[in-house]
Length: 339
Image (cartoon, rainbow, N blue to C red; front, side, top):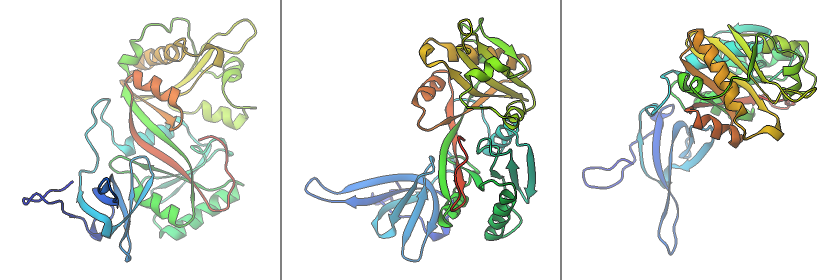
């Protein structure tokens, strides 16, 4: 909090700071035990004429605050310094992640990319907005809804929060227009070599193809031809599997896409009966070694916020959160499956 030379807390933010990252303290209650305060750090996304502030935190959650309740506030740096992992900006990672999970069809709307893949995952069937659409927002969203409607798909916009250059303001505008935030996940980054240096992985089989055995463990019913095209898309794609017992699906699988200095891990899945045996680590280590051979040095992956087991695994492998991303669904549209 901001403290003046007199030792008093001061509010040093105004409506002109909308769009900036701020730190505020607000009075939230009082009683016999004394006054209660809440501290919030995030992007100031609005400040209306009634003195109501909206602040979007790193995870995308929006905090409402009355200006009259503020006891301190200041503008803070756009993003904290990362303590571990490779240095990377949001836009670089967004483009890398998009290439690793490519749509079958895409079209530009200014700096927005409209992506479609027959409804197979939100990532391949959503708008990636890396700049301005070249139209007023209402007109751009109308165009987006029309484009997806022509393909029989609900319109989704993928936004991100929590890093320099992310889209807190766009997220707030979508919410104000009635778009529903349907999924929140996170993109984590880490160094590749420590993953490759893990013991084990000698029993992992690598292939350029997601064969029938790999698909038998993949956690989706009835993988379509469209899904296979997405799974095999990307600059340099590898599939890993740990064989199961005779006639059984693999004990574990994984997918990795190598793209320049980056290796992206996905679809790391383990037979529930074989969990806590290090198989996920074995799969990632084998894939990491192959990615190192192709010249990669950094790694990224995506994990949903409620997947505690995966988060513990990735934290132990040296990964750390870079930013959160969200899929906003157009009003009155049905969902389209996992992210």
